[in-house]
Length: 457
Image (cartoon, rainbow, N blue to C red; front, side):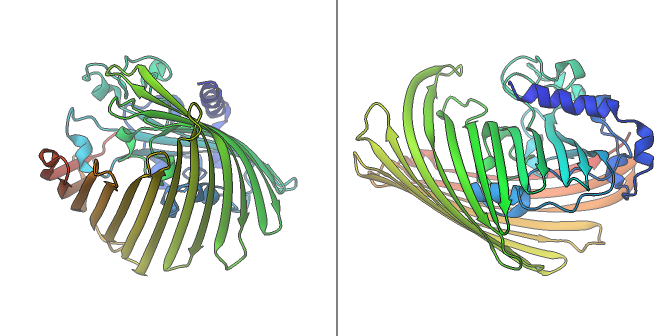
């Protein structure tokens, strides 16, 4: 709460203060999406014809997980453009998963915005960026409690008709700058599970809220980064899950030789507090632990393929019972293939091992997925299919479950109908969960949806 509102106010003041004629002098090509004004959006979040869409946020589709997502987010950026000050904004985004239309029928929307100031002679650049998830007032008004979370509709954002509440801050707000080879920045993010279908990203940035501050120095091919973060999971305060807050200090060394893979190594140490919640979201039990972690990652990208891998080792100790130790080891591997321009194949694998030293209990998790997308660049349609398998098992026999899912969809652009661009989408999915311990908990589900989207202004 301390860092988000000043950053939001900074972005607002920049948007108000920037003179419109400055945009007309820019040499940057205009992006058609910038000219689309989202419906039910307050004027202070809308900037028309002011340059290219925002590109300073985290690279969600980079393919790395855990700490390696941070490495790519801070990879060397493009050369500084000649424009000294540019405000960039995209149109709205909504989820590509048709299941968001189920339930109360709400439609999540995402607005990205940002501003950048740069000086080429001094090799200086300052960037402010952010993203806000909101429900249009026309939809929020029909919701019993309004807003995105569980509570009533209050600030921030209520004054602008944004439908945000105290438990749902903006998705991300950040400020970063660089002077020659020195960098620094601060970021706030808040992405609950209810927004995962709208905000894509690596596992390290899912179901997290909190702040992070960092400084970094480049020394030739070596980049050193020191960060301090305070992040909490279970953003939506689901009483069935504990809520864990991790406060840690981390140092990262990254080596990025030209035409070679990017290698990273991170050591982190800190404290965690796990809180179990009552049905109304209040704390009922607390567990405090101290932990150390060591993570390594590698990433290599080529025109037609890229691969990323990461491994993380964690040791955790209970503050009240030092002999209650826990060790965790996680591995992730992801490959993206682009054999032809119209086809993308993305397989991924993940494994996890958790061991409780006091009881010698082990917990094993594994996952595998395959995503196929096909759509010629100039065609009016796009086809995709996704398959996933997840398994979790403990040595004491308390947990033994597997989930298998298969889904596919077709999206067709129908041109301008009913006053605006029209898209027709079809989606079908099958999901199966087998519980070998509590067989009554096994479930099957099948669904199919048809969606007609008409954008009009």
